[in-house]
Amino acid sequence: MNIQRWIARRETNWRQLEQLLTQVEKRGLKSLNAGEIGILASLYRSVSADLARARTHNVGNTLIQDLQTLTARSYNQIYQGDRQKDTNAIKDFYIWGLPSVIQQTWGYIAVAFGIFLLGALVAWWFSWQDPMFMALVVPEGLIRMVRDRHELWMGSILGNEPLASSNIMINNMAVSFNAIAGGITGGVFSAYLLFFNGLLIGAIAVLVGQNGLAFPFWAFVFPHGSLELPAIFIAGGAGLLIARALLLPGQYRRVDAFRVYGSQAAQLVYGIIPMLLIAGAIEGFISPNPAIPDLLKYAIGMLLFVLLILYCQRQQQPD
Image (cartoon, rainbow, N blue to C red; front, side, top):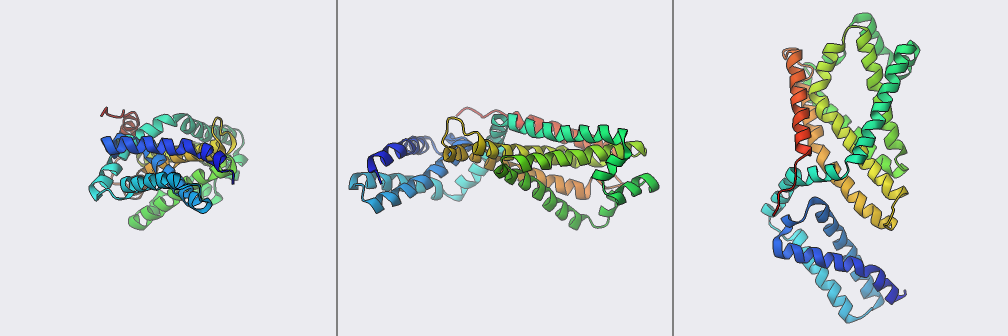
């Protein structure tokens, strides 16, 4: 190993970690935003690996001691805080950190929404033009239920709400996490999932519209969809961030691009989990409930969506 070249390549990370640690030691962990906290943890792991390599290649006692000091300081800040600090960090992330990350990555989320919308518009257009197209997207049994019996399928949830709600949460998380993991395929699989789900929604919209069931169908969708669909778009945006790191690292080395964009994607993942849990509970207990008027369901959905938009626009409070 060329020691001087290795030191020159890694020294930038050491200095960045030193700067973050100095800030945390003076002003506390809350002085970092969610992205900087992720970078701090990533740099700690990186410098720990550098320390192991330095010891293996005997690069000199001074450098080894400096790296030991850096790793010890990092460990103290990351792992030795009390539970209250951990609780505050989680609270701060959901109050301020997540809106900040969403604002930083809104372009990727918008592209994810655009892919979904394109799929919905394609399905809507072709389903009106050619009834055979709908059969390619929507299961035949569902088509017969709506077209021949003029019934929606949500009634199967009634009487089985707890199990149905749990299954819905698991399914929504699976779709979202697949959209995120699809970034490893260069975003192709993420785009496919978004486009296909758009196709499905668009075709079903035409199906219920043609059979006079649009109003009760969208009354079912609005309460949980106001959180579930944005969560899926955010997951798609996270997948596109990973694809960006893989295909277009830009000014970064690819490993550094994964560190930067991967950190943002991970924060988006943490952010959508509560959204999916809440959406699953609503879809299990509120959306299909015939005792709740359809107009009230629309109102619930609109209120939740407005609150979500306001939440995403929150600005970090100054220290």
